[in-house]
Image (cartoon, rainbow, N blue to C red; front, side, top):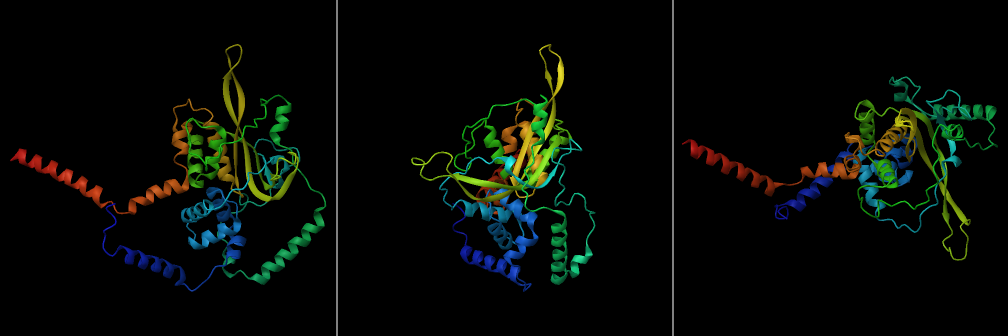
Length: 371
């Protein structure tokens, strides 16, 4: 390549890396990994989702190393993920087994099991809390103790509650179409490249790994006018789901021999999208389709936007860009998009000089003709 013979390149790069470390250390403050894990839940959840690697500890480490840069943290996590072995695939997760921390519906005021507001900024005043400037550990510990005592007085911790899905009750009324369970193994997009047209499993994988801001922007674009998809959120769930794997020796054990290996926190969204379809009398009538979104951690905006795009990409016959699976799926990956944009900072001497030479030759020719 033309970049190799640049003089002093190695020394300059080493000096740049030293300067980077200096910028991180010059404030003479150290942020602990456990501090990031305890106080930056939103960043950790976003990094885990976009990197498709569920590890709060490694996500916190990547945030520290990247000095809070989301794109760099995700890049680090993806790179680390590529070095890890994959000895098995987990069993299909059933969202009905979620231990719900938050569950709300915008479609119904009263839902079976009730609304559970949980932890969210949705109902807070968006005003700077200046008290955080002088926050003290002792006061926080006292507040936590008081809150835990309050919980013990009002909750029964012996009972584990599983909440029904809102859409199941609408299906019982015949308002939503029933579908046969599709047990076809999903295509792993981290093992093979996308081939268009894609399957829904591929699309959902790309969407859940997508850059949060891009997924949100495209979902907003569809909501605002590119396709006029305006869903009603049937249910938002935030909670933990158990993960099981099959017995490694399938020859001697049945499919029921499963092992619990842990749990992950996820956000799940089912959106109800109104559509007009023709009935047997060739007349249009209103029906609903379901858009689905799920991602690691608590990231409700992304999951809702994902549910919008999921429904859009089920109708690729539309001319709107948000219904074009190649346009959407090939441009929302954070590592691909930021990497390609960032590569423009690298040397392009040869190609740019070639273009300059072409322009100079053209201009010389024009000036010669004018003379």
